[in-house]
Image 1: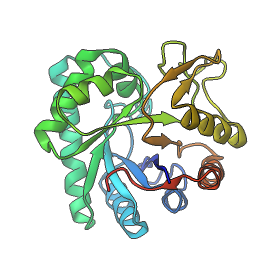
Image 2: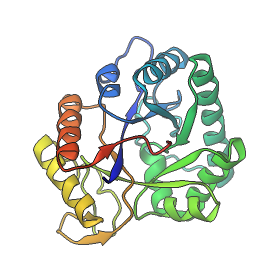
Image 3: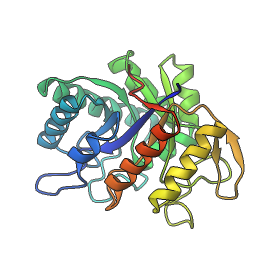
Image 4: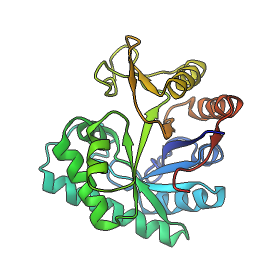
Length: 253
């Protein structure tokens, strides 16, 4: 029976601000990418999310992004490669510390938002992210956007590189995630998201907005946790994947 990981970006509240239902999502997904305080999250939110992930038997990773709380890390910030490297290393270190405090450990790193999108297209930025991960802990896996420079950078550096697709995002013709605001960039219908995910896994390929199929390795599927229908969509997706004969399990194991 084939196995696939189901991941979500969590721990994205801040102070009194709550973002999504992390406890419900952690009962559905097999891996969680936890915000490290720069685009979202804070020490208390991080520790609480790591504790909940451990209790749920969910693998946890660091989810570093640009220092952009107001923009939720979705605005591009012009940093040098060296600045990207230190930005990511700092956040991965924070995640390791907060996970340890919660009695858990991190298994992987996944870049967030605009940082992830830039690293998907710009090899120098992807290399900087990977250098940071490898310097902090070379045993960490790198959860990378499929069909991107992230995958190439991670593999070239010798990191275990896990290729992921998105259930709830549309793809441009070059295989990159379609820019938010582009028609079809956000897949808001849970049934549609589940159906297209099954097609992509079955085909071993990304489906672009025009219907093109771009062959990729698919090891993990991301469903976002910061929208009003996230829990219902994730629950439906898991049910559809298991009904198709797939086993949901963390790639870290």
